[in-house]
Amino acid sequence: MEFTNKIISANSSEFNNINEIKTDNEILIQQLNTNVQSPKSVREKISIITNSNIDETVEINLPFQTDYGANIRFGKNVFVNKNAMFVDVGGIVIDDNVLIAPNVTIVSVNHAKDPNRRRDLELKPVHIKENAWIGANSTITPGVTIGKNAIVGAGSVVTHDVADDSTVVGVPASLLS
Image 1: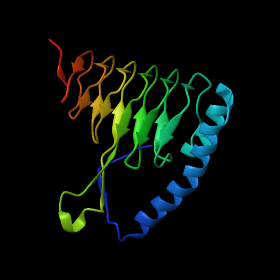
Image 2: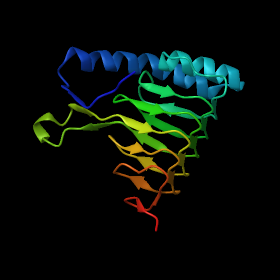
Image 3: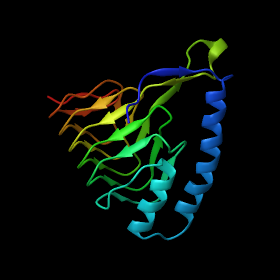
Image 4: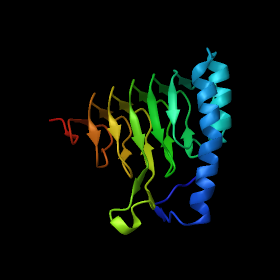
């Protein structure tokens, strides 16, 4: 699935549809996180939430949070540790062999800067490429691509694309020399 930059008016039918899916998925997320689950059961429930197949090599430790759920795509052999939060209305694509540490937040949507349109949604997909590693307590902001084999150091806030085979750290994240 291809996600693109887009603005959704708060007064549109598309905005209302997003809220309906969000409401339905909140119930599923609550059920997912309140019961002891086998890895297979977690994948099955997240497949329903994301409306996509989750490969048997994907491991997601609970609790797992998402505000929308329907715009997350997982590759193979992905590991997501506890307390991940995916804000995915704009789309989050996670390629094969990605590691996501505890307490990571990935955000693909923002609100308009114009105060008269503040409730409008600005969708900017996030892409985490193959074999990347996102460190604990990091935040990936809307529109960012994390390159193949890249590392995001613990506690970083990533506001710009990260090149393949590089390491970024800090707030805002910058290249580790």
